[in-house]
Amino acid sequence: MIYAIGEILIDFIAKEEGKLKDVREFEKHPGGAPANVVVGLRRLGAKSALISKVGDDPFGEFLIEELKKERVETKYIIKDTNKHTGIVFVQLIGAKPEFILYDGVAYFNLRKEEIQWDFMRDAELLHFGSVLFAREPSRSTVFEVLRAVKGKVPISYDVNIRLDLWRGREKEMLKDIEEALKLADIVKIGDGELEYLNKNGIALEDFNFALVAITRGAEGSTIIHKDIRVDVPSFKVEPVDTTGAGDAFMAALLASLFYMGKLDILEFSKEELKELGSFANLVAALSTTKRGAWSVPSLEEVLKHRKFSFLP
Ligand code: ATP
Image (tube, rainbow, N blue to C red; front, side):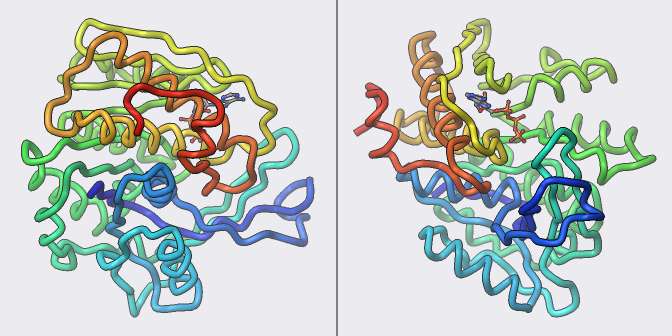
């Protein structure tokens, strides 16, 4: 079982072009990066579960129902009786993406004493991102979980920087990212985010990762293991919506480790890195041809485009 800890929320995506202030209609989609990853994993055939918190409200109910439809394990999702389910309003059409991310929501209120530690009985990997670090008590809760599982199962981290959550507190954010990088075995980061970290004195070479994936949008990705580094070209598609491409990539990367039987020992040959990079690029590219963040194709669909030696 692959677990992720982090936000699950509703993306209200603008249906028409223009500034958020002028948009009249929004479409409701389930989202939140860690939730996108567990759904992607399940579609690719790996068992997954989400550790999170929603409100005791209709949107929370909707999100749990949607995860159940995807056959993701939901028993580690707590219902908050004080805070509402997280929501985001997004404008992705036109030149400049705009977001309003609501604060004071249930996933930021995930408390240490609410963690059901029996998840460790069947956990084979734990995945997380940076969003829950932006507020307390979720920040302390995630760090506590990471420290408890470190060395027991591999930890995977999608750095996923959301600067709007940290206005005026960027130094604090960088400290948390550095701390999180120390705990991670597998790291995924966008090339723009890596540049930002480098500019602020954080270099990936200073950590001890088993696997690093740098995503480069339409340019593909770079996969690094020890001193082996491979640049993997992207799969050419006509994208209609790139929301969640990074999460689709992440899900495919973790699914490939599962199929390769690498979750115990993270050791790779150059050929294996090329194959897992191509698989992740293909899944991510296909995800951009569908709307919404839950756009990972099934394994059967992926196999129509290319065969991979590690897949059944
Ligand atoms: P996000 O922007 O979703 O938070 P990210 O910055 O990590 O995530 P990208 O680097 O934009 O994500 O994309 C992840 C992967 O998706 C890329 O490495 C690539 O394989 C694939 N991808 C993204 N955009 C395209 C595209 N236009 N054509 C083909 N593949 C793409």
